[in-house]
Image (cartoon, rainbow, N blue to C red; front, side):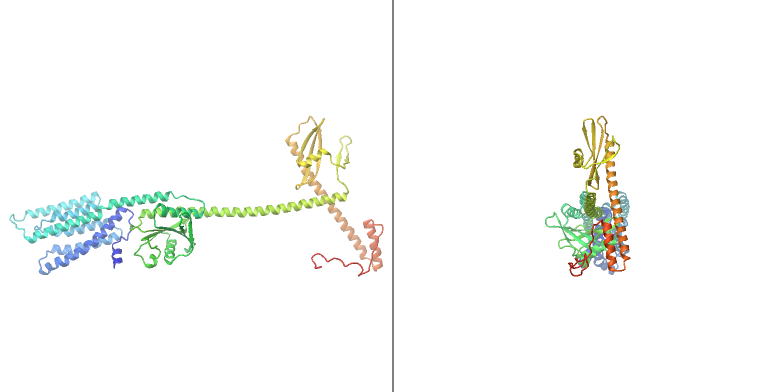
Length: 555
């Protein structure tokens, strides 16, 4: 019963203007109070006179038909969002209630009744409309005065008429006082609400955006609880289907956050509604029990707004308060702005985190590739060293050549001059002055491996430019590459020659028709191929030690 009465006295329509919201609340309350009062008057005041047949028709029309109907229409128009029409209906209801006494010249309480109508017009209407109402009241008062003048001078006022005037005057005073009490606080309340709205916009406007998701959530919750003073602030992060993925609250120390994936039925219901409608949702004590379970024990109301980012719902901000005052449209707009800013910041933070993760993965991949490249380069250098070592061993000595300018021919060189060693040790071109000459020593490097060095002698008076030094480096590098290519070519040719010789010997051996002939041919060809002096072949199975197992087979 109490919940039903409270719900009936609550304005269901949300007016954008706080003053209109306050006027609508006052009209609902006053209309809901005056309608039962009017009904009591009809039952206990007019009913006995109606039974006796002494009630004027004007009172019957005014108090049984017109006034109740106007009060009822006032209530429904307020709830439907038509406030200005409701105000006119309310003024009309008050005027209709006082009109029956206008056509009755006996009573003298008419000015007091009109005063209540004027008070209502003054507190509910703007200046122009209130002037119109006052003019109508003045005309009505003039009509009443003219009717009083038509009465005989010796008209006696009966005690019943005096008592009626006194009662109407008291009712008018009480009604005027009630109207002033209900509506006089509008300006003060509006000032407080406006101050609170401004504080919400300023505080939320100072919300700082950081790079990490957890710090963003912490800052938003601090704004709600610490700066704005609400009982509870929590953030729900949702999946694409609206299901709750994570619930975040401030920790005990207010410096960190606590996370959970467990939510009750009320939380899931409200968050799902916000995610699907993308509109703010309020939770009130008079709501259904399933929705009220969303409220904590100390909270009387809650506001849940979506967290929007790039057109998608990322979550919801839940603000719960123990204050009796509802969330104003401006406060709802402020929290919607916070949800929009938080959503965009969350997307940016997640993008940054994704980029950092991608960068880490790429750095790991690059490090792995560098490691593999280093291994390949190391293997290439080892192959290069081994190849040249075997090549030089096969040649029997170090290879060196000297181009004599006087003779014009190339002569072998069996040692490395001391001046070239400096170029080898430094790994770069070295220019040394000595007597009448300048010596340019340049290392021959291939794949980081030092193959040798080359030396140029130029006149001492010649200036060697940086371009010429670079040309020497290029020539040395090209020489290293050419040397490696020629070594590989010689190695390939030698391998091909060995393969060809082996094939020739194998073909000759295949022509033998007996073991003695085969052994004789093998000995002759082995002597020729290897330049051997003598060849022996033994055939005695079981005497020679057993051959080792092939690669990959168990021993």
